[in-house]
Image (cartoon, rainbow, N blue to C red; front, side, top):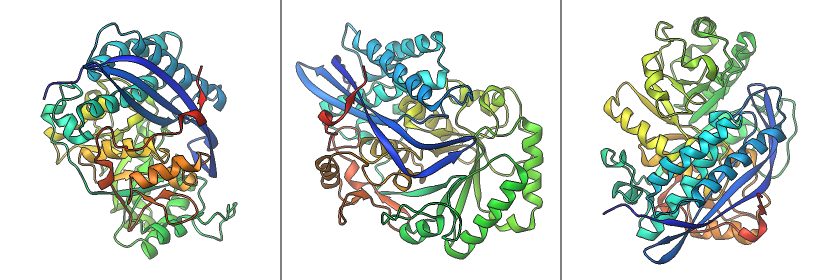
Length: 452
């Protein structure tokens, strides 16, 4: 099949406030609320109009961690990235493939954002969210689901023919343990009493979790104390579990990272946990991560990039410095994930492509990001939006029910409100293999606030 060429007729941007039921702390930031962005595109393909959509949480203190900026200023950075991308994509004079739109107009929008002072990771947010909506429209025009459509060349991406995309029936959830998360009921902190787990112990019991992502503070004594407590709990209740560690850019340099790892390895209470670690994610700040080699640190697990992944060559640059993997995140761009998957497929025994993005909310965001990662063969994916937000949040009930009815198995509609269905630590993906990008339902557009 040839690539779908489309001409965008209209691009609309929206947002909806999201309030977390529990505070989420990573690095130096604590998040209790943030908006979710939505994109709706109308495109003409072969004389007929198709609609594509996407969504992504506008997380503060990740795209730009500058302490001088407020969280509200972070939100506005991401709104500006969306505006720039919408303006650029809407200016296309000719019908183009989704990939050509991204390369020609999306990259121009990113460059303009950088010129206006946005960090590149923030500037590419608009491109990433637009690309998902455009891909959705193209796949609907071709009447094909994600994996088969990408494999057939619908998007025009030159990397796709070198990939064997999967149509997985399920994927394991890797539950994130934030720095403010309560581990057991006796720990201090609020319980929202909303029928959902409020502690790690309760989440394990409720969801049957076996994979976990543990946030590091970068402070040795505090990290050892918390990791030891977590290890005791997981040893007692999580069976044959596995963990990943997230450094969140908290280590000053390669030397301090090496000393930290040696101290973890020497701690008696962490011996069991250390044998269950699968990878270490982005320990060094993005401004030095691709300048300092970590090859001599003797870290026994793959060290992967995340926040440093703000340009096409970041993975190759990291490999030259001793990194052995990179994250897939829809908020960084689906074409980045496809490109990096091709590189990992050349050395699957040595390199790692991981699924990382805990903040994806019920509906378009979690469905699209989950299917993107799982289709690339990733077996466990960081998911925790369902832990920090109750179901669909303030979305209208008809919207939540429409998604739950369109995707049985992925959501649990047996209670008062639809919620993500994590059973035995797994997500059921079978209902996501529908024409378009992972969704047979749509947001209630009239309930959203336009981004002007």
